[in-house]
Image (tube, rainbow, N blue to C red; front, side, top):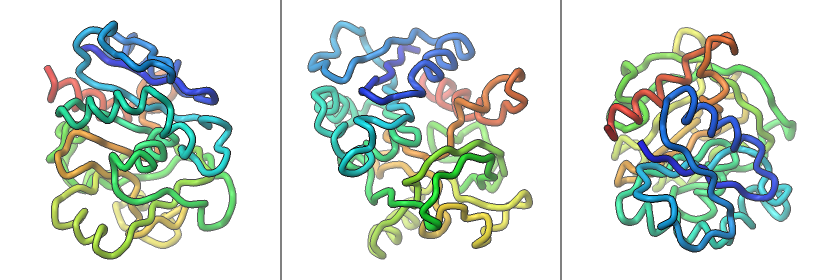
Amino acid sequence: MNVGVVVFPGSNCDDDMMHVMGEVMDCNTHKIWHKESDLSAYGSLDCIVVPGGFSYGDYLRSGAIARYSPVMQEVSKFAQAGGYVFGICNGFQVLTEAQLLPGVLLRNRDQKFICQNVYLRTETTNSALTNKLQEKEVIKIPIAHADGRYFADENTIKSLNDNDQILFSYCDAEGNNTDAMNVNGSVQSIAGIMNKQRNVFGMMPHPERASEDILGNTQGKKLFESLLAHLN
């Protein structure tokens, strides 16, 4: 699989993604600088990852400036042509700002940066990211964000539910959605979504930080295994 990892000023998870996709998952991986306006040099890409970090220092609003980087025009064209795009944490914020995914990511409910492991309930297996998981399967993945509270209006939330676009929700170890386990206050405890065409994905938790035995957690690797199984 041929994968591109976008790098903005302030990205800090790009090397993590390069390592997981390249060394752990054995994909051809390429760093794509944010000023790129032509992706042809990277060959026929199967997937573009927009990684976590603090693009442009989160000035104005998380992802708001990165959305206007030249590379995002190419990412949008790639997605509109059916290419797979995966945004993690700040990458999820960038994809909502670019309107490749619906909704917004707001300041956490308690107005604090949160860095901890959380439980996620798998809400659908009908996606390139979750086809190797079981429906309602609970996985433990770390988060690290200050602006991770997913919000959208009632019509958008209804559409997400009606079209089976919700990937994960925050839950407890038994898979129950509770207010206490909804760590950032996201509407309906939403932790990750995809677009209607099912080729653009966004989630706040970091599966790349839970993909190796040395890290003490390999549950995030299931998402990358699902992606490879779908694309190969």
